[in-house]
Amino acid sequence: MSEVTVTEHLLLHQKRSPHATGQFTGLLHDLILSGKSISRRVNKAGLLDILGGTGVVNVQGENVQKMDEIANTVLMYRMERCGALCAMGSEENAELVRVSPEFPRGDYILIFDPLDGSSNIDVNINIGTIFSILRRQPGSTGEVTLEEVLQPGTQQVAAGYILYGPSTMLVFSTGQGVHGFTLDPGVGEFLLSHPDIRIPERGKIYSVNEGYWEYWDTPARECVSHFRSTKNAWGQSYSLRYVGSLVADFHRTLLYGGIYMYPPDIRKPEGKLRLMCEGAPLAFLAEQAGGKAIDGYTRILERKPDQLHARVPLFIGSAQDVDDVARIYAAHKKP
Image (cartoon, rainbow, N blue to C red):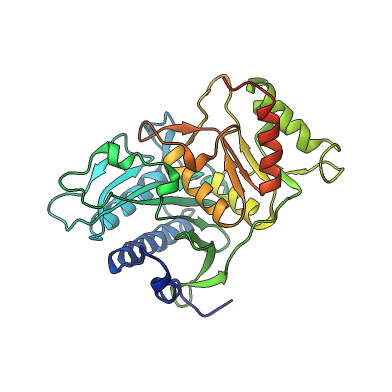
């Protein structure tokens, strides 16, 4: 593992990035600090009374876990005070959160899922924080509006995730490739461990919850049948791997190749995953690493959200595997 810290890496690449201002670097510094704080709490989850649910149902209709609430509080507190943001959107908050006038404001907007996969924390499975960084249009003044925030993924300045598992990893991109950093607990720094990550053009793993088969439409079923049959590019069935924690399944897909699928179904025709805090940031990473991400018919990064918590189907991973899905969907009329 390299001795280059994430801060040093940012400074080394600062001149090549039009967004690498001091304000942006400060934003990432506080985001990383928040990740370290959440990691410390996650690692003590079995020792402290922070496992299980709160009894509250969030805006997504999901049971809020205690660690969801803790992670969201950590991020909201730290990032509102970082001086680089004008607004934030969290999976756990129904409305856009504008930075209070009592704190310095910047031009950036942070959208995040504070703790993806948190329902798995009780059984010690990898979970993570997913984030997307946007920027207000030049010349914008006054209170930030929701319409300013509802930008397509192509407008992201940076995106990434912090994975909490056997080791804590930061994986992010500022539009110049994808780089991974592993937290060294001895020095308290994220060190460069996975420079310039490239996803294989085709993988041998597919990741999907096949328990939802009866709820899927015809093209979704055809996609899964394609990967588990012997009539694909490899001439043998892909291996099925599904953790049920999006950030963990995506991380494996990013490193090993293959495809992650969360199709729409009759219960959730618009999809289950959130476009702005899950689909778009992971699609940004996938494309920066040489992969692709679509909703079946359309490139994820080209979809403009119509609300803060817009949903989206997701097929993401190795470029050739995603192309296989696109061909199957193209043979069916778009609803």
